[in-house]
Amino acid sequence: MAQTHALQRRGFELGEISIPSTQNKPSKQQIIEAWKSNKAITIPAIAMQDVLQSNTHIQAAHQMMEAMLDGAELADTFEEDAIKQRLLPEFALLASSAEEHDEQGIEKVYFDVEKAGDICADDLWCKASWLSFHDEDASLRFRFSFGMEGFEDVAADPARQLWAGELCERIFPESAIITKNTEILSLLQEILGKEPVFVERIVYFNAPNGGAQFHHDVERGHAGVVFAQLSGSTFWLALDKQTLMDEMINFAKNNAVSDDLKTLIQHREKLSDYMEEQDHAIVEELIDQQPDCISYLIGKGYSHSLQTGDILLLPQQDLDHCVWHSVFTLGDDPGEALSFAVR
Image (cartoon, rainbow, N blue to C red):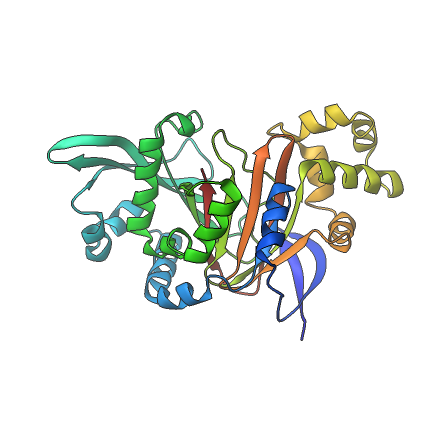
């Protein structure tokens, strides 16, 4: 039996969607073909058993999220016994900083990795951030990386990439729901032709009225992203960039849109370049804020619904061939999710 949900994000009422109670699991061949065709694909319930086994850690993560919303300092939560014991002996907490230069940033905590008295990886960090500027969106994310944020070439230092991933696993042990799931590993091994490595990890708490607007996750050295829903549920629009441009152009030709958009779609290359700009308000107003356009994309079959235990694969070949995706939180409670890049 289907359930009806309102699509709401950051003050915008974006229509309603109907979510089926069950989804069919795609075959291995369908999954592989989707990835190679730059298409997102949902694999329902593939991680459900692991989610159930990780219930204690997932509950603890929700408690951390609630503590952050109540004003707790991230560094203090990492000093609590359970997390501190998992970080020992390799990870040394060095310092934390309030991210005052970043309006969405909350706090960044820095670590070095020590072995036998020697530092083998330095300047690793976990950063807690708001997902948006909207007062009624309590969505949080915890991102793990290293070096100078915004300038780090993560593909150039695979060793520190791996240690940053290990830091995520120590703080959020439920990371193993992706990294140790034999079925997921087998699928990615066949897709990539080699053993997958999970890097540039983000732990999300998408709250009601929240979720990421349309974007892609292309980064040098990365093949794509694995997203796992550990609690709660989300609704997605996901399609490769070339198809998204086709659909934007088609929608704009047959519906009332701004003069700026009418001008922009006359030149496909300019549209493509504009989408990569940090401020792409003309496109954003169409695909993120106009209910008729969202309804159009849903009607064309580009939607995915994720329930607890589901994963979504998002191939990211390059800037011209990558899955753009938009996320909406469903229900009244925040849900935890993992978003791990695959190298």
